[in-house]
Length: 160
Image (tube, rainbow, N blue to C red; front, top):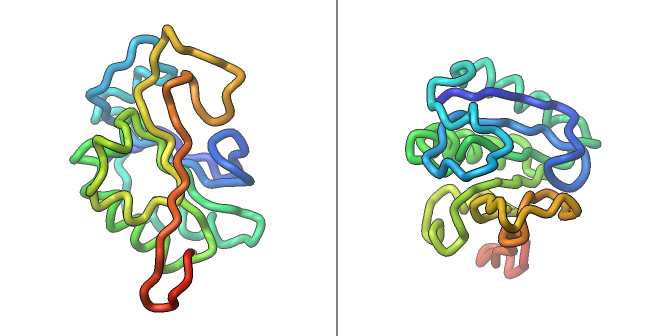
């Protein structure tokens, strides 16, 4: 997987101060896309063990609320193969961090996908130029949704 951006103190792509990773590769090709250069899977640089370590370290300060994964399209199969084990590691090593995932696919299309097991908030849906709305927080068009997941833990009997 390649990535084309890493912001360690981002306040534009989710609640609080975040680490944001922009992955390369997208087959959606939304008309009016904000990052069309990210459609190319070869764009940017390789996501390496060093990159992974750098992100884990950037998540350590208590004032960092979490990580946001954007693109390109994180839910392309090529990207998921790398992101799933990485997000699993994030949950293990930074359990107080939340994970936001921005996808041009809808929740209904992604339902049952393993990657959602490691996501706290999904911003879903393709960017639709005819529904563009710059007043919306964390999204570009009115069809896109911000979906927060709450999971029931059978171990504790609590929602978390």
